[in-house]
Image (tube, rainbow, N blue to C red; front, side, top):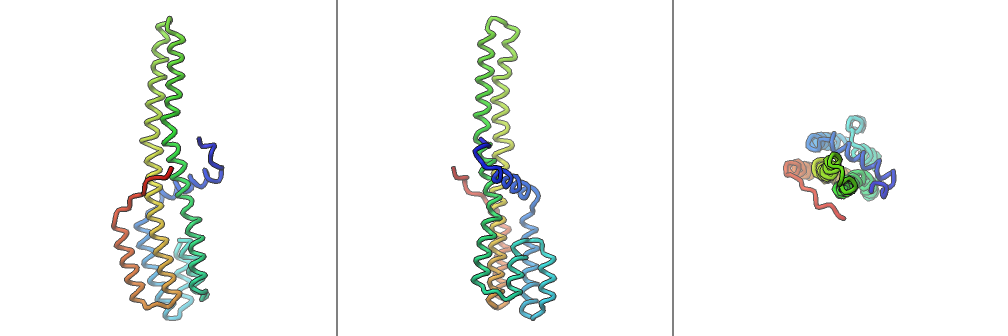
Length: 214
C-alpha cells in the first residue's frame, strides 16, 4: 500500500507527524497574538528596528515572511498571494500525514487477514499432525489481532491527531495572514485587537477534524 505514495509524500507525511506530536497550537497562538500586537505598534509608530527585532524573535515562517514584506511596504495584494502559496505548502505536510497513516489504518486489518489465510493453510496442511495444529491456529489468530491492534491503536489515532493539528495550524495561519493584511493596509489598531481577541477565543474551542476523504 505504502508503495502507492511517492517517497516525497511519505517523507512529508512523517514530517507532518513530527509536527503534530511536538507542536503546541495553543501556546503558538498566544505567542503569535503577542508578537502581532507588538509588530503592529512598532509599524504604526514607525520604529522599523523594533519591528525587525520582533520578526527575528518569532519562529513562525509565515510571520517572518509576511512581516518582512509589510516592513518593506509591499502591496497588500502581493502579501496575500504569497500567504496563499506558503499556507498551502505548509498544510500539505499535515494532509499527506492524514492520507498515509489513514491508509495504513485501513490496510492493516487486511494484512492481518492475509496472515490468517497463511495460518489456516499451515493448519490444513498439518491436519494429521496434532502437534503442529497449535502453531498454525496461533498464527491465524495473532495476525488478525495484530492487524486490528495496529489499525485502531496506532495508525488511525495518529491520522486523527494529524488532522486535528492541521485544522489548528490552519487557524493560526489565518490569524497571521488576516492580522498582517490589516497592518499592511494601515487599518486602525482597535480592528487588529478585536481580530486577535476573537482569534484567541477561537483557540479555546475544541477543533474536530473532518472525516478523511477517500
